[in-house]
Length: 220
Image 1 (cartoon, rainbow, N blue to C red):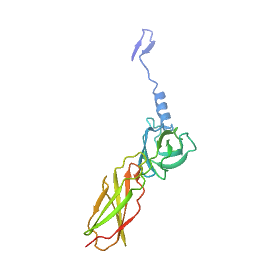
Image 2 (image 1 turned 45 degrees about the vertical axis):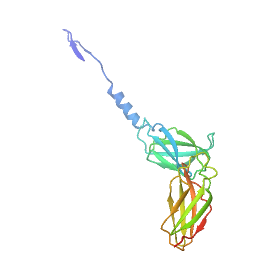
Image 3 (image 1 turned 180 degrees about the vertical axis):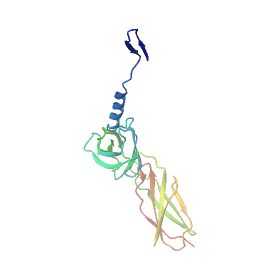
Image 4 (image 1 turned 180 degrees about the horizontal axis):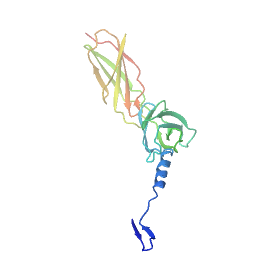
């Protein structure tokens, strides 16, 4: 920017001017806007009837995000939304969901006293846990019991990743994960004590239905 004057005393100013007041007003205005829509939504089943909904913060935050709310509806067609939780984090585990059911999850960003964003939506059909293992048998050994079984009739499309065995006795119980196999020897059991054994398969949907219980008494 430069200033030039004539011999008569008239002066002109040449250069580029920036209206800083407009920039300041724009910045102030942005600070009082409701936040933008949450981004990169995803939904992943993390247990029986449990789905973790995750998202990224809005690219435009306005006055800042004070909280998020998560709603869900049942069915392939968007239906009535039900509030299932609120958080200041960017993920939330939604529980109490029905197996084999299609859900739509919506996440809304909120700013204190400045309104809310439009919701972002992601859909997921929950998995169903495996049915019970079949033909469970128990054979007594010396202070041990060998338990064997057949795979469940169905795991509803989710691969079986392992099994859990439950050992129950008068006054106590214990559950142990044993990997993806169809038999296990349980050691260290007191001789002469009647123990109860049941087995369940695990998949991405969590622990499935427990088998019928078999009773076996370890030998000395």
